[in-house]
Amino acid sequence: MSRAETKERNRRALLDAAFHVVSRDGHRARLEEIAERAGLTTGAVYSLFGSKNGLVVALVADYLRPHYDEIEQVVPAGLDLLETVDAFARYYRRSCDDPDARSRLSLQITMLGMALHDPDLGARLATSVRSQENHLIALFAGRSHNGDVMTPHQAQRLTTALRALFVGLSQGVTLGLAHGVDEQYFAAAARALASDMSLIDHVGT
Image (cartoon, rainbow, N blue to C red):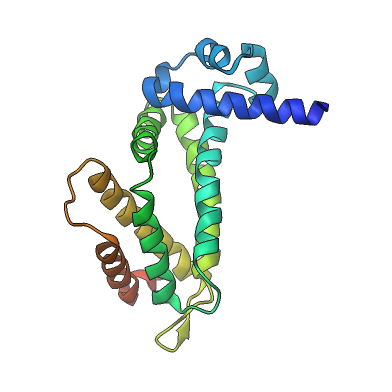
């Protein structure tokens, strides 16, 4: 195995271990336990990620990236804005039924607690999430809607609103607090939000 392959294997092992330990323990997660679970030493964490916070930020990016990649695949080119939002909403609802949905929710809630506990980590996590959301902004920008074309600014505002909507709905579904909230519900709510141009067309100062 080459040095690059060994490095990637160790990186993957640490991220997988961190997912389990951080989801359970939050800011109390111990690097020693993460490294032991990965079959490595804490030195590997510092070598690959620089710090515990660096590992956590990488964990969030690793968690988000596949979902954004899949979204780009399930939304074909040529759809208008509302069709795009509809496809995105249905994909998001289906993800609530994944076997690891509860683990993902646990990680989301844990990350919020860690961000509140450690402002520096919170700032780094916010930067990481915004970087991933650029994929959605690019997905919506340029789509036609009511004879106009969605601008990047409008796409950014729409992305922010949809994230808030879907995170709230998906938490309710996963926790059993949103009975009857199916794909159609997600799609209808998202289309209604996207149709309200007074929200996404506002130009901030």
